[in-house]
Structure formats: C-alpha cells, structure tokens
Image 1 (cartoon, one colour):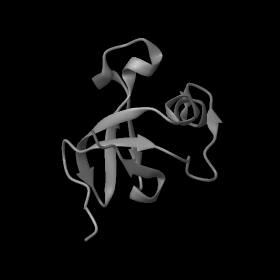
Image 2 (cartoon, helix red, strand yellow):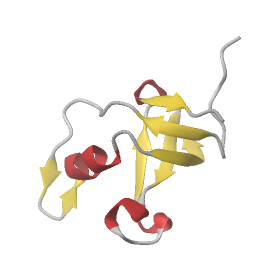
Image 3 (cartoon, helix red, strand yellow):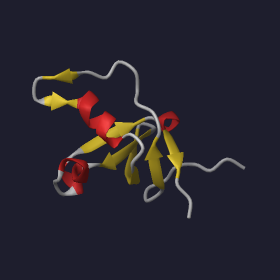
Length: 79
C-alpha cells in the first residue's frame, strides 16, 4: 500500500528539481540546495505540490520562506 502525502506529513527533500536557477534576489536554486537532506512538515498541498516552510534554513522563522516541491523529490520520514 502506497502512502500519500498530506498536510502535516514529515518529509525529507531528497533531490532538487532540474532547471532551478538563482535570479537576482530570488535565490531559488541556492535555497533548494540548502534544504537538500533536511526534514520538514508539509504545510499545504497545492496543485499536487507540497508546500514546505523552510525559513529556519536561513536563520528566520520557518514561515518566512516556502518552497513548493513535487512529491518525486520527497521521501516520507518515519519514527
């Protein structure tokens, strides 16, 4: 039985989506790289993508920065 992602599910970012780039003030590729291997709860699911609050990676409150990730780049965290 395959588990499905839901709000509150604890997941780990195990890969970064291809073609991410850093553009001026929006450092998307860098942020994803910093999050790689880290664990986050899913805040919401929008259009099949998991929203992860990742601000603490940058030393800020978690809600200050959010990334949206396709499920194939995530793994469930157990125990």
